[in-house]
Length: 413
Image (tube, rainbow, N blue to C red; front, side, top):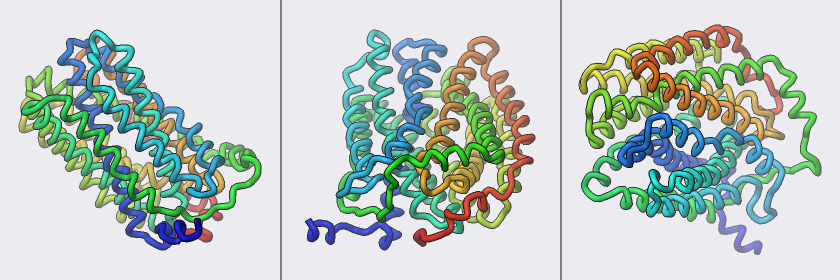
C-alpha cells in the first residue's frame, strides 16, 4: 500500500500536473456545454421538436447543475482514506457521464423525448459531480494571488473545448453522423481518468461534523448575498442570448450546421481570448472595477447581437460576445473563490455555481418564451436591458479577496 502511494503524484508538489488535470477536465466541460447549449438545439430541431420544447429540454437536462450545493457538501464531508475527498468524485463523474453519452446514440428525441431528456439529465448529474469536486480541488490548492491565473488556465482549456467541438460537430455530423459525434464525446470524457488514478491530493483534516457554523456565518455576510444576486441576474441575461443564438443563426439567417459551427467556434475563440487575457488583468484590478468593466462590455455586445443581419455581422458580433463573456466569467469566478471559506470550499463554490446555473436555466426558458412570442431580436434586447440592471449590484462589490483571512494561510503555490 505504501509503495503504491509513493508512486502517485502529490498534487501539492506537481503544479504543472495539477494544471494538466484541471485543463483536461475543463476541456471536456467545453465539449459538453457546446452540445448542451449550441448543437442539442439544432439536433432536436432536426427531429421536428418545437423551440419551446427545445428550451425546456435544455433547462431540464442542465438542471443538475442547479443543485451543486449537495455535491459540494458531499465532497467536503465524505472522503476516501486512499483517494481523498475530491479525486473519487472526479473519477466517478468522468466515467459515468461518458457512458451516458454513449447511451444517447439509439434514442430518438421526438418519439422518446422523456427517455432522451432523462439520459441528458443523469449525464449532467455525473458531470456536475466531477466539476464540483474539481472546483473544490482548484480552490484548495490555489493562493489568492494566482486565482486569476488558474481560472484562465481552466477556462482557457474549456474554451479550447468549445472551439474544437464547435468545429468538429459540423464536420463529423455532416460528413458522417451524430452517432460518430456521440462516440467521440464519450471517449473524450474518459481522458482524465488515467491522470486521476496517478494522483494524490493534498491532505486535509475533515472535522467529525459538518461545520454548519461556518456556513451560517458565510450567509450572514451582506457581500455574499450581493454576489449571489449578481450571479443569478447576469447569467439569466446571458443565456437569453446565448441559448437562442444558434437557433437564430439557423432559422433567421438560414445557415447550415457547419456554418453555425464556424460562427460559434469564432465566438468560442473570442471567449478563449477573453479568459486568457482577463485573469492576469483582474488580478491587478480591484474586484469592483473588474466586474463593472466586464458587465458594461457584455451589455453593449448583447445590443449588437440583436442587430445581426448577415454572416459577416454574425462572425464579428459573436466573436465580441465570446470575448465579453470570457471577461465576465473570469471575474465572477475570481470573486467566487474569494468568498469560499476553506473548511467548506467545495460547498460554497458549488452554491455560487448552482445559482449561476439556475440563472442559465431560467434564461434559456425565458429566451425560448420571448422568441416564440416576439422574435429573436426582441429577446436579445431584453437580455441587454436586464444586464444593464446588474450594474447597480456591481457597485456594491468590494474587498471580497479579504473576506476570509484563513484562505491565505497554508495553501500551495
